[in-house]
Image (cartoon, rainbow, N blue to C red; front, side, top):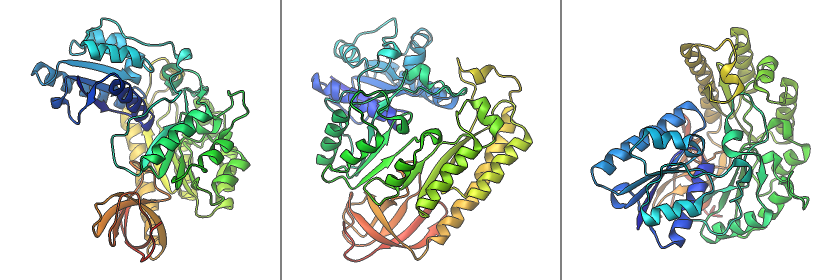
Length: 443
């Protein structure tokens, strides 16, 4: 049986899709690169916020049309949207032959194997999700990086977020499982490991062997051929001086701080139930900048939270202008089912939310462009993400995460994927950079 997996959503969802693929291959099925070459198609959906849910539904409908045209036989939904709304999807979308929540790899494999049509969603209670004990992982690309999931679920009670209801309570993955997967990835050419979870800073709190994020990083840094380790999703309330010190020490773990702050006004932070304050946030940011003036700090903010006043939004813009973040994303508030914020009073009109997002992103664009212009003439380490051994390639600096941050267009000789070069930055092109490889710079 030939199958195709259509990936949607975040890197954590992509890792889940790789596990699904590995399980199907172990049962004798063959992955293909497009739905029109498949017998069975699986949409690994996202259900985090409304735009992501709409994208998932649109993709199911589009693929359902191809199924009706006879391009493949069966269509299944998996992932977050299926976990959350699987029965509704099956009832309202006759295109679907089944819906599968997280971790039900055997059941999904059985359905694909037998071309089954199911009437009810197959899911596991979120408290029982325990599929992170690594046995195998499918690698579908030649990229020099790979995402590694170190935990699943979340214990936070942020009033706007539906993740705990979808993914369950926080569960750290055993260290040995992570190290085994890291070695497997390194043996298959991955030089950068990007650690993903709902909250990396909480890693190990539930393990009985005393493991924590710091000693996980120390063990990962011993894995041969791994050059860079990047952490995503750090909660400001959980940042310790020890972690900041390790990340800014020049080890394989990069001085790249992904801190989704969500807001800076204390009243909004309280309404969001973020378990942190402006004073604490500013203390963490000042500690990072004091430890390493060249540390890259990425953040994300939500605008238009219920009751957000003009003055509270102005607090946020003033803060962004003063702090000058290296990387910044902005989301409009989305009222998600079964979250406290969805039923709060003083919900803001969509046009107000969009206007505030545009204003904040315009401010950040000025900051980002100025920072890039200041890099002209400097020398940066760049990892090559795409290139065929010729005289041009595309890569990233240590301060850039793939898919979300900027790129560096590199000129040089024999530029190969996975090589790390010292590159002289010669020009800034908006959010991206251009530069030339230094001779004898290959790492």
